[in-house]
Length: 154
Image (cartoon, rainbow, N blue to C red):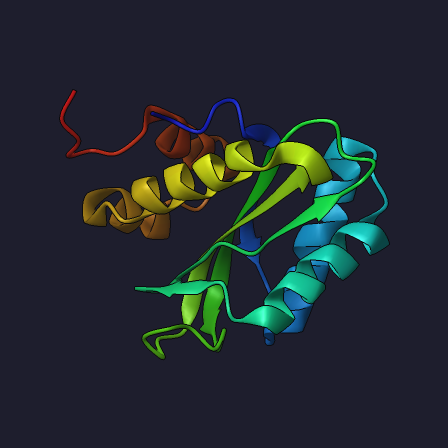
């Protein structure tokens, strides 16, 4: 299942230039605030609070930072392709260059977990992640993300 209901075209950052995990989370929170109308600071604080519980770097250069906000009305995401991989304290120790930040309502419960699982499943596809890493523009990244995995079974 593609990510069309989670990530909008204006929620794509094709060339994120950051050197640290914190600055990546700040930049992505800023974009999340712009596309949602929510406070970028509140988004950043929620994501950072979750990150303190354990890294959301899931391995293979991928991170899915996430948080919940009282004022958030629906689950949404921001996708960033980093110019250079950064340390994200990932489970496998590998630096991260693909980040999908998810924000959900406080009461999202199972829907939040389903969204996280869907993003992880899609970003686990090696063909899709190779294409994401090779794509340099927002519209191209959006097209890849919204077509879904390249090797999935129906």
